[in-house]
Image 1 (tube, rainbow over the protein chains, first blue to last red):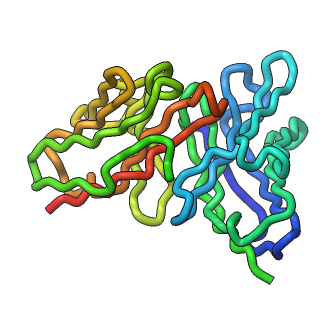
Image 2: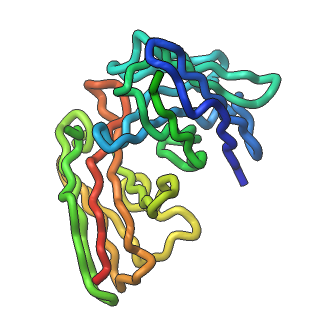
Length: 119
Length: 110
């Protein structure tokens, strides 16, 4: 049974970088049949897909247009996890952030991390 | 403003059948499959229908899904109090090259 354990600070200052990690158990970040996504949810924007990383003989990343200039999603094969970095955050980036395993659909969700953006 | 359009609310009494619609366009629902997620208060979303009409193991057969053209529907028959939740549709959008969601439908069991 796949489980995703999220970690990272719940408070980020404006203009700084939001960093979260998602540790995978029961599967491998290098799986050739899965992708590893980040999705956020806020009252104003609803559910918003941010991007994903996946391995198909080499690593691929895909990012939402809305955050493409500010986002990085990286796998860490040594620790079997993947991470999210979102630069230059503003109050608009405040949300619950979820890491998700996808296999053509969003199959397993992490529990979510509430991120507040405030000085 | 979500890319996929859902009614903000739906309701039914125990035992009834309710349907929730999801409207999209040729670049998302028109070309790709639709999934449905259930979100109970304070929890993460949970997949209840994938690939238009497939149920993950453990999801009761009271849940069913369908798709026609650029619209999809989630139906819940034999409504139970534990079905009270927010429901979201999701699909890949070929133009945006990303996943898009509906704004969610809050289902109330009266």
